[in-house]
Length: 376
Image 1 (cartoon, rainbow, N blue to C red):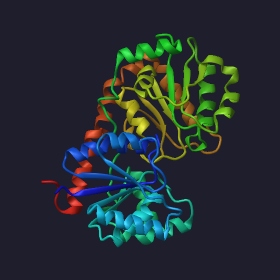
Image 2 (image 1 turned 180 degrees about the vertical axis):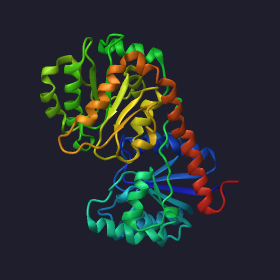
Image 3 (image 1 turned 90 degrees about the vertical axis):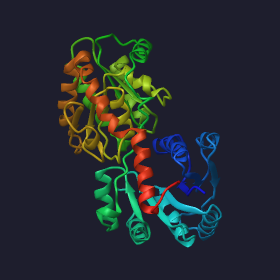
């Protein structure tokens, strides 16, 4: 019988972590792992996609992270499933999953942390710190997250291995046809630099700072003026629209899009000057489509954008100081469409190190390491 792996997550919305989970599960199943999913709040819209691939999704609602009833039900579910590995995601799932797995005597318990400073309160840190020794490992999506986990949870580097995110490089790749179609749709001239910001319009992503820097570069640029595309939704949208009202068609708000390969291909450079990240899937997706990246040095951004051949990394914004971002955005725009396009091969090659295939292989190896064997 194949070893059973139960992945525990709060729910399955249309988010980066969850979309990646949907992509990874069937590939691990095809390697012989019996994959199951447990949601601790509700199913979410991606649950159907998981079930359509023949993978069981169970909801065990928790009134709180430490709900005795919820933990008892999860423990019983793990026993009935004969789980060999419990692999949970993010603090709100990691805490109850660790407790339930140990009550169920599950052989291997893995918790994954997806962002730096994932804990909201000192009490949360203390709770996770107490539970960390009861896991085989706390998986980290970047070196930056690993450093944070080691410091906060007081565990060794060996107990905090890195498991980088992965993206599907068969979906995200350079495509001239997609580029031409997208640019026709937004009315971009062939020599007009298009900058894309693929992020939630939330203050953590620093959309105001990025817009302020774009305004400076826009005023300095000749013609045709660069275009800035916000791709995402969030509470800051009304403020951003007000700030950009005098820039006309140079700033567009595209909302949430389901055709991101087209968006990346249609752009010339990606911008993500976040204040906080774990490891950005969007950066790797843009690189895979051959697009250089301008990003802040937070989380794992510098681990993906590791040389000037594929983009620019600047210090995270300190207050209202946008000059470091302006310097790099100015350099990127001054390269023009052709100069940015010449970086395509290097960008795509860099993204290949963070492919979905690489993630599946690394996950398979981790499971085998901690379990001591794998599917026959």
